[in-house]
Image 1 (cartoon, helix red, strand yellow):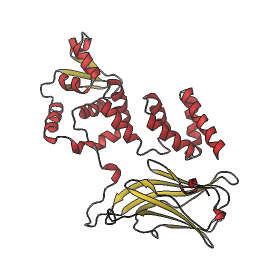
Image 2: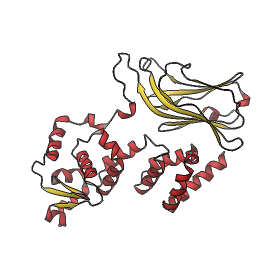
Image 3: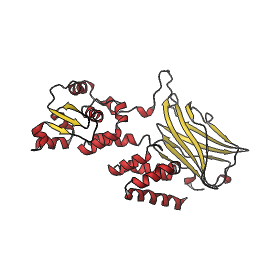
Image 4: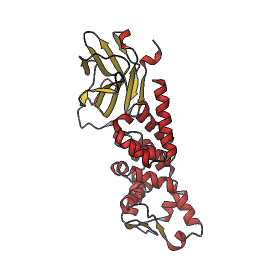
Length: 328
């Protein structure tokens, strides 16, 4: 039996364990795989029935804070055509031991199959009680900023204090400050440093952004964007960051878009990854679609994608499909 028999492949919130030959054993435990801040294990046991177990490895460092997890788990078999057995969605389940989640099968599994595990949310159980929060909403960079100075900058924007430049969006205008824009964007710096119309007229036209998206973009530049606005406007922010060369914002959008890839957004994100040269996002979208087999769940959407997407990108997807088929 090869080492690959125990390996679990992962992307941001998805894990897959490929089983080539279950008949050769009655017990198999996967290698640990990291999702969130825990190492997880999957276990297969075969007695009269087949059992699948999932559990986190709790150490002395995290045993007092076990995860509360929401997930979807299914078994996908290629025997006799692609078929899936899906467990009902598990929501907010406290996981402290190897016995907390056990899925029993009465239907025998033959041939090759995949255990497909998609984490929907991960929360930490606090020993002192209190409100639970998702670990995927923590760590936003705003908490590291210097609050007093940023509050003042935000006030300059929100109250229009001594603004000296007007930004015209597609459906409205907002006042801003040349010095702040120039400090955060080399493109704005160039506008104000050379004999361009923006320097003479004190106006910047951004006709490809709504006033709402433009305001959120400026709140990022001024350092007081909210997490909710950041998540809601990520694609608008990505476009603006690329256009005005705000690389820290582009990086933040890139990392954030990796965290919640699913069937409803993967094709759009793949297109944006190609358009804005985001290699990590492109790789993860390809992996999600092809290696993890989610392309079969969105066949109609993928057909529409083929008709409208860049042909070079479509070719890359098909090459990846062919590569995976050859190895399966």
